[in-house]
Length: 191
Image (cartoon, rainbow, N blue to C red; front, side):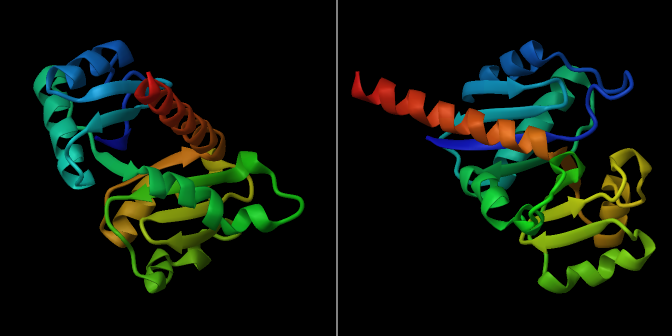
């Protein structure tokens, strides 16, 4: 079994694309995903499946959400390695006085070239900062996520990708959940 983390974009925001996490969990279990676990209402879902390809998992989830809930929801699926890489590779964590409340990660549907940063035209979003690492963009907002041009729609338009953004607290909590899930699997395997 492979564990995947599905990051759904644009659900339960301002009353749009409302999906209860219990109903989402039941729908995904209904199509064969195992050990389905959600985190907060914004659409972070761990699933276990024999399918190893994140894109196929994302397609199945997106298809089921449309079938059951009638919502067209972009889904970015990442693996354990991607989640762990967030902590190893975030350049903004290296600063001594970092305000983690201003740190975000944009998860992208495809791997980006290192020179894709030029396509973001960072001079238009200063003083916000960004760093590209594969299929992630690390973001450091100068003021906050609510007062920036460097948001999901801007990223998608400039890079022609699907993106979903999570704050650093959510990313940290998701990594902790993944560690707990792995520990439970080890304990259950030994029984």
